[in-house]
Length: 203
Length: 203
DNA sequence: GTCTATATCTAGATAGAC
DNA sequence: GTCTATCTAGATATAGAC
Image (tube, each protein chain N blue to C red):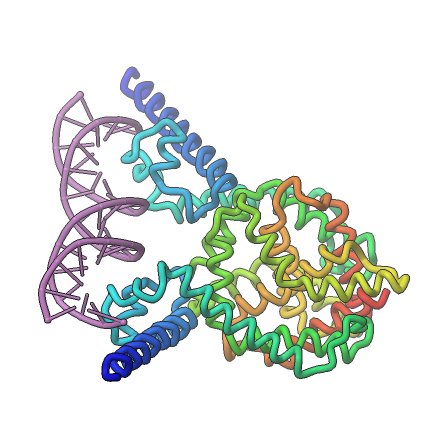
């Protein structure tokens, strides 16, 4: 079965190239951002030829989608690691803090991908509505928790979708703009936002 | 003085061209965003030739700076129209609401410029630190109010600069992503964010 | 100052040999 | 599948006539 073995080797090499491209892209997105990273930057950083890129991805956006899968896996893993029932009570300080801490640390640990997604979102035609879809989509879980609170008769400051989007906006844009190794530690940020939001949610 | 009169006419024409370029740019930025608007889009929308653009602005970024001046003038005017002492008390609901309402309405009424600034900020190299500088710069007044509160011995949820940046992030990204004529009215947004933030600030 | 025409440059994407 | 070489497209910016 020499033929089969050869094909297997080829497959492995292809997977290595794909992985090298993803690694290089992630590093470059973190260093100079998604918009300022060219396809040729990625291939040369990965030690591959320009043409090889298009064997694995149709374009830069498709590569970003592949990286996004990693981010979602990481987030799911973190969420699964903690108690996380639907009736999560965000008016409890410890529970709100944990929710914010997980969101913050996932964004920080995968900053390259978050930066890339953010740039990709903002570069889109603003009239397309993509930004609002992304914001509400990414804060869907938060919205569900708020809806649950409302069903319990708790007074909310406004529509769950809007409040969730606002909280997500605070976290996402702060994380985007705050440089790594900046003036505030992760604990300072999470504590500050927890206390800022807690009483408003607790009504 | 025929010579002087001729020069005066030329000056007026030039000013008209400059104004036409600014108007066209503002409209296009609102429709398709800053990044997706080309210099030739602006000139043809203004009914002028490509080359004329560079007689008035070095590049697209410089034109945006000129528009930014308008935005700041509008904001200053709105702030001057209300009582706005340094000891503005953000723990008073009416005063917090007014502050948020002004910020929100300026962003909404000049959405084209806000969109352009936002895109310009995000398209920059994320490692440059520009985003954090912009965020802290635009929330400087808010930070001063919070510092005043702290001097009065009021407990704040965190560092004034960080809290101010977080609040600014919530407003700016929500405004950016929320499409005009979207699902929420300006009043709903301002009321929701006021109530969400008030108790956290009031301690 | 404004115009037309064009030079320059960059990045995305493909063709065809190996 | 990967490479080298190249094509194409799109956008910035300039040259020179009026």
